[in-house]
Amino acid sequence: MKRATIAKQKQTLPKDRRESEFLEHLLVENASQHTLRAYERALQSFRTFQPDKTWRTATADDFRDFLFDLTKAGKARTSIRATFAALRSFYDFLVLHGHVETNCVKTLQLPKLEKSLPSFLTIAQVETLLGQPAKVPIEKAPEWIRLRDTAIFELFYSTGMRIAELVNLDVKDVDTIDESARVFGKGGKERIVPVGRPALEAISHYRSAAKVFTGPLFINKSRERIGTRSVWLAMKKYLVSAGLPVNLSPHKLRHTFATHILDAGADLRSVQSLLGHASLSTTQMYTHVTTERLKRAYRSAHPRA
Image (tube, rainbow, N blue to C red; front, side, top):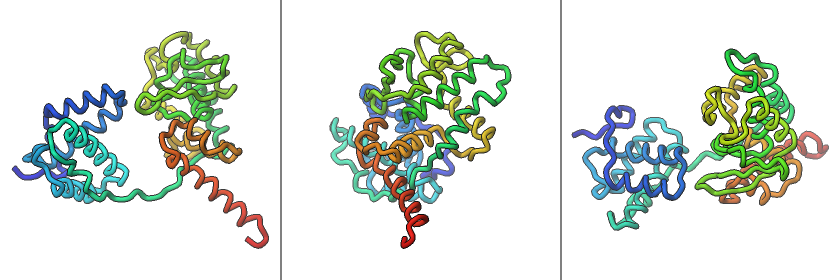
């Protein structure tokens, strides 16, 4: 059988027993559904590329060919690195349980990520976006939908939480007395984040109008937990009505939150805690944004810059 190329994948190979055990292990370790799907796709992608190989017989050269094929197919470096992170984790699992002797994926040199600064909205743009739900007509939907959307984006900007963290909030996770929210991040890690008064007031108005008292905090028209896609679509609609770039995503509000509070004097460790970053180096990318802005301000204002 000829080796398939990434661009021509047609078939779907069934998972073998080792893959199923690995995915079950990830589930026990509280991996998110997003992570499980991504890892499963990565394993499937390699086996479709090398259908004649097993995980025991695959070699570093096979994975090097796979890497080359992904690159040739125009896959983004972030996507390639994520795919090989899944494969490395899988082989670590196989080595740990004695199914293979070595992790042959670890020897590969992966493409380095391009260094890009996170984009963010200005304070004026944030104000414009947050005011859109009250202005945009809502067709064939209950009136509380606009209050829900206002609460969602106020909470995004107030806390900097991830979109998956936000849609998974329950009513009991937001403490209006303590003005905080309990957030479950990657790997099920729990953190407490402060919530601003405007966001708390928006949540209160939405809950009262939608009669949301228990269970999921943010619901859809069917009164089920809202999905991440629905939040994306809502934000795109409001960006269009506000005349803002439509390529902005809910994650950009997370970038915006971090950049604005660093600009206001927050220390890096505090921002790391608020964002739920495991490593301080992840948070440090936001300091590059503020540093670049300081440099531009210096160059434009100082007579001898």
